[in-house]
Image (cartoon, rainbow, N blue to C red):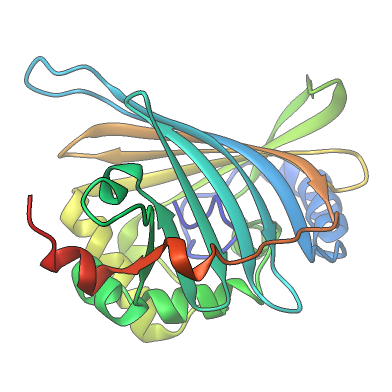
Length: 260
């Protein structure tokens, strides 16, 4: 999943045929030359059902500023429920209207990244800090450097002519040039917990090297194949994100103390 956000948590694996390398090198070099400070995107992730349960689909949109400071405005729908999140620096705000019913109208929960990191088993503070220096082309550079990508030909995405590049890696070969070794180890542990055996990444680039669509399929023994698609709508557009009003914000620690 980290590959989708361009956090570069991708590593080695089997490569494609040598005949495709020149085209791949040219496109990835063009992609690497792109400087992405902000972007807007649409995303859909599907997790297969189990034990007779239906599959779960998470879809949404996001406007992200990577530099000079990290900020994001995200809106998702999960099982028919709408969820909004805002990221400002190292703070995350999650809108949960059901909380307001127990707390006099404060629907926004501010999340302490230290507490969230402990619960998630991943250093979220470091992950967000690394995101400031990353972009969707990081994955391309990492996989191309290991000669993992091969071309799957041209097609049309959102009315644009694109070339698809695909490659895969396994958790055991996970490496990164933008994440710390400790964080890579944590990500590996979470992938192992999911029963992940392989992740395939397919990226669609314009002739100028602009990423248009990124599709990842994470093969797991616990949930089956988890598939995510990210469509990048705009690059380097203004992104403005403000924190929720203080009178509408409650801390996660305060939420845990609420009854009912």
